[in-house]
Length: 139
View 1 (tube, rainbow, N blue to C red):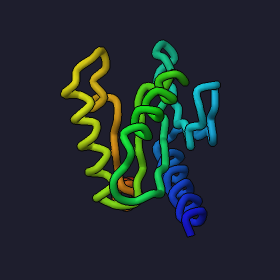
View 2 (cartoon, one colour):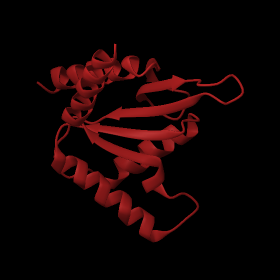
View 3 (cartoon, rainbow, N blue to C red):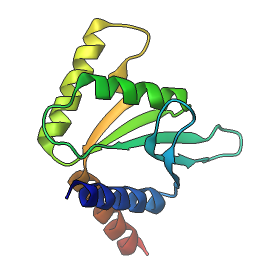
């Protein structure tokens, strides 16, 4: 069950990335640990390539703070500009956002709320559907 959920979430993420014009790499590991997907795109030849680390979490409910910390470190060490957690439900989303806020209250050199985004798979799919309809209406 969980393996099929992860595969379907990965497929939706890849579809969204490709619709937005990003190149998708799977299970990227540059020595810091595995990242589910890395989306990258270079919008202008004089600008550096933008990279987004996408971590798919299939577990529901309260997320261990160590999961957030280790994934943030993995994505930073692999030179990604932003970390996106894709989760199955709003309760998991709120759990991660609450923990990121508590990390930010400690202080430090990195404000994680500016670096980490958490989105549910249904929000991601809904955004893709709206973008597809808008593009089709303009054509």
